[in-house]
Length: 436
Image 1 (cartoon, rainbow, N blue to C red):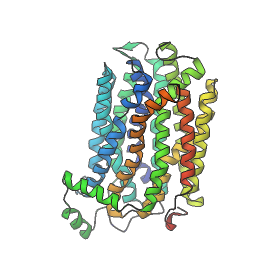
Image 2: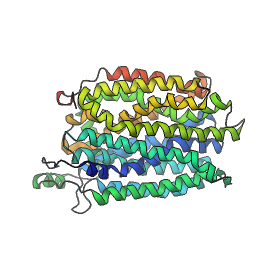
Image 3: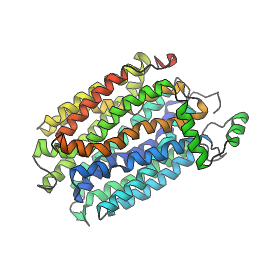
């Protein structure tokens, strides 16, 4: 991109990131609604991790590929990253409209694969979009604005799981009616918010030299794959250090998302999906409220973390946030009063705000600007590989080492986040980012 990046107003930074709201509403439904749908359709606890393979596998295959493709894309009207936003959001919206009509586990799992493909196609270029558009001074605000909209979008998704059951009562087909309302709203948010960002934000036009370089690149599938492996071979040391943090961090998060409803059902209502479906549905609804609260904490704290990162350094901020998240998870499964769950999950809300933005500040100065797309995709590989490992291994761990108890799964997640915080202490960011 052009070396001269204008300073944007706060409202311009907001507008360019609004599309992240719709993407994260969809992810919020995946985190809080998809696993209960699997439960309603008769899945056993140790099957849930395998049924969640869609997200990490599609992320592994799609995000670095889309990143490499977008690095080699330029259209005078559509730009570099925006075509991928639109295609991904359109695919998401179609899948969200269809998802509640799932009549079996195989149908729900199949639609999740397509939905995740759309989400990943839309989300990956957004990280590169911020790096493309904003100068070094404004990048912390840009990345944390994405954390803000992550919290805002997922808050709405989770609150819909609490509010809609009060409005839409009964069942439609094999699923509660409120599921349809939540997913239909998500379809509107996904395409609508992406359209807003595309309509209000232009991309920086490449210089003549940059445009010639873009046009000289081959954009075939095979060339994009070669570019991914070449970029991994030249990956900065700080990205390898971040990969270790992500190994523990993202394995832990999937443990929480897969087991939070069932943990609350046991600790508060002493119920399971099979033994008492009615009480479990109450637990799912309350989980939506609890998860909605942590996302409120996320968007309330996101921009403050950007300021702290500038003042104290991104590494210190992320390490402290991980410790807060770990403490919340360790307390979570032992709480019997449903109202006290909000205090425990607040730590994760702050941690989640950091996870969605601060780590990018640790690595962005070491990434060549002409390869922002592919390296942001590789960072996503660092996210999804731990998720794949979790989905393949955690069913066995839960069954044989954690007594098939979802409460133990949350405790396990807390311990992993504590290890991630320790690993963060060993990250050595570029000197230019020590205070950024």
